[in-house]
Length: 212
Image (cartoon, rainbow, N blue to C red; front, side, top):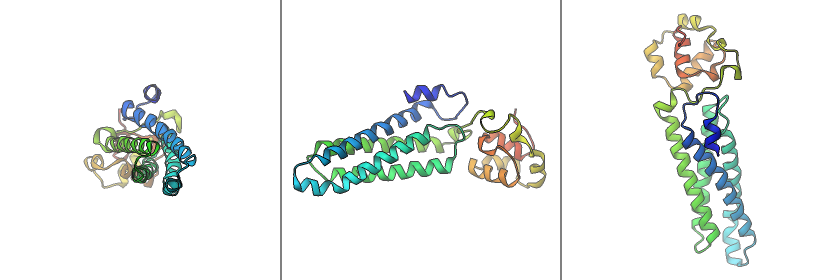
């Protein structure tokens, strides 16, 4: 379902809807599994397992919360912020690994086994998503919001000529920079609408050339 919604997004994101949609679905699924696992542990009658499961239950709840937050953040394509999103993803992956590790220590408990499996699968998918986001193909313009989302069309190009006159960085060097570096440079030069510009637009604005 998430993939279909992402596929209907009215602007280019630079990210294939399949892998992002799969990650979103898995995050929501994992959150549900972890909450159910924590509830099952609360009904445990074996005193030894109750003591052993305290850490797992805490991590299950942490995992459910972070998976839900990560899914909601990743689903927001408009006004995408790479550093914030990556921080959320890495925090979620850390808790997923910790939750799976703790659950796997309790042998012979079906609900913890299922929880560990869900956490491992979700962490793996997030790893694939990070690789895709860091690839040159996806990084060219991931993602691009409609111009009207935060600023009028064309407004993001204001100040481009002035920026070109003030910078000694060549167009070739600009193209070798990543999106965060380009955005930082654009902000320093006083360009507006930086957050919603694709790499080509940033390079064009900083070099004094508007992309077609």
